[in-house]
Amino acid sequence: MVQPCRTRCAAVLALRTDPDYSCSAARRVVFARLYGLPLFWRVDVDIRAGAAAADDRYDAGTPAARSDAGWWAAASAIENVVAALKAAARGQADTAEDLLRRGCARIGHDPGPATDLAAAVTGLADACAAREPGLTRMTAELHPVTDHLLRRPRPGDE
Image (cartoon, rainbow, N blue to C red; front, side, top):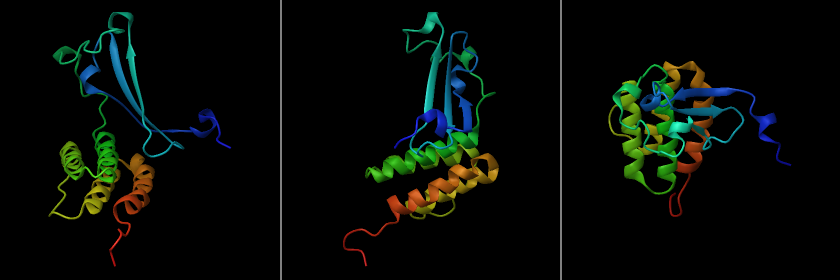
């Protein structure tokens, strides 16, 4: 039996705001990673005042609405890892590599010489956890998923 979310979400693993709307007078975008939910689930909440309720472009690109104050670079980079893993599992290797490059840039991580995609995924995840110990649990979840999706034997492999 599946338990209701309220009993399974005991802790917030990561919470960050979108820097594009951190100082907006009528809009915030919040990203939350909750303990107990599947790795590929993230809660994204777009909070709007009445003035912005129907306007998806409200404060988009407005310099005065932007601030990096609530931005958590390592949490953002590890979300790039998750997105890259999903892209790779869908056969979108170029997209996965681009996401990993962007994640590395966010935290100033040098991935070193070209390696396989699985090593790049786990390497960036480990670098995120090294910078922010609060991401250790999420990184631990990423390793077996990476093994399953990217390192499993393919038909014809020996």
